Length: 112
Image 1: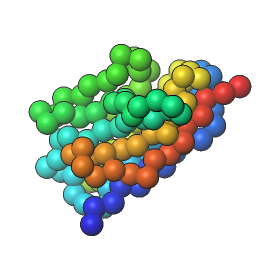
Image 2 (image 1 turned 45 degrees about the vertical axis):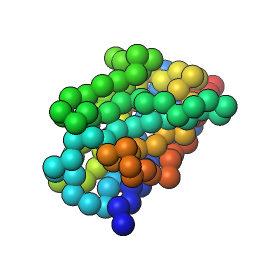
Image 3 (image 1 turned 180 degrees about the vertical axis):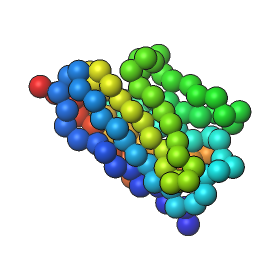
C-alpha cells in the first residue's frame, strides 16, 4: 500500500517561512503527477502547487513567487518551500501522488 507522510507544518509569524516534506513509500522516479493541496476551515480543498503529467510545475496564483515545489527522487520526497507566509495561507496541507494517493495532512498556521 502506498503511503505518503507529510511533515514540516507548524505555527509561524506572517512573513516567515516553512518547508513541508512529503515522504513517499514507493519509487517516484517515473511519476510526474504529484503535488500539494490545502484546505482551510470552511473552504474547499485547493491546488497549491504541483508537477503535471508533462513534468512542468504549476502554482495557484495566490502563492506564485512565494512558494516553490521541488522533489528528490532518490529520497522519494516531495517538498514545498513556503516563504513570505500570510495569515490566509493558514490551512491543512496535503500532498498527493497521481491525484489518487494522499497524505494525512500537516497543519500550517500563520499568525502573530
